[in-house]
Length: 327
Ligand code: 4GY
View 1 (cartoon, protein in one colour):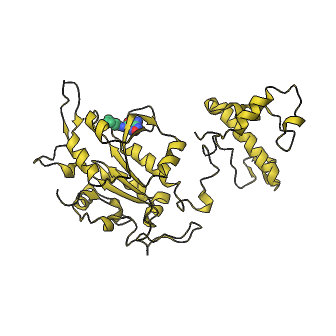
View 2 (view 1 turned 90 degrees about the vertical axis):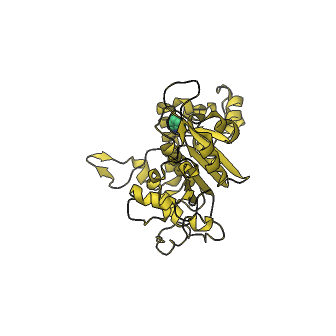
View 3 (view 1 turned 60 degrees about the horizontal axis):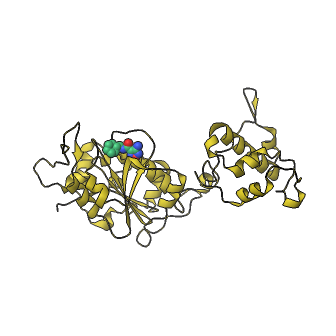
């Protein structure tokens, strides 16, 4: 094996966009694993002025690891910005890049070849992908191919991936990857939606972003992960900020009242109505029952106080007691 199979674009100076030549230089940088861990040596410059929890010392708890197997590590520059960039700087997660081209042994560093049986396009050769994954994998690793043939990503899968200690995200290109990768290397295959991209990189970035924001300490107070769309199976209620009237359009009066219980009820009802109107597929029987409820009673009614002619009270109660699935 050659030097520098792992790339860490996070070691580039934070303010400069990275020209390809710089990334190429990074590819041959020392692969010493600890020095590749994001956040090392960058903590002094990290912003510490927010309500987010203070940076964790990376030498003790570097957070979950994500290795992205990609022919184009420079494409991941966006993950150095904003909230995810800050999380990486603070060592709340580690993102590294592994280039399968660094695991080729021919003069042209070939990563693709013609499909057996003929047909259009090229197929990614198995060996560079196997060697790239094996260079970072351990028994705890989840090895995930980004592909339209995978299970479709959602908030529940994001939450599940956020509990795993090590993700290896493989970005395919060309017409696809040799089937033996799927059969003998993967633990999962994930799609970000029913459309075809030119490569798995954008999909991998979606996964990294959605997973990273669920990790402890990544979001500050102001950005909290609890209340937004999909975390409780509903779309978000409408939000407003100042001014109270803009171009003649007022903020709903209830939100200005300062009456917290009233505001919570209004938001819940809005979330139900927005979800029913825009994403009826998300409406479970329990949510439909809640929507049908006119909300005149303040507390959730118990069976004995409900009118006996109320529609299917037992099934409503049963459905309501199930946890609302994340979507
Ligand atoms: N959709 N969700 C997706 C994708 C590109 C041909 C295999 C997707 O996750 N990945 O479209 N990926 C294809 C391109 C090879 C990957």
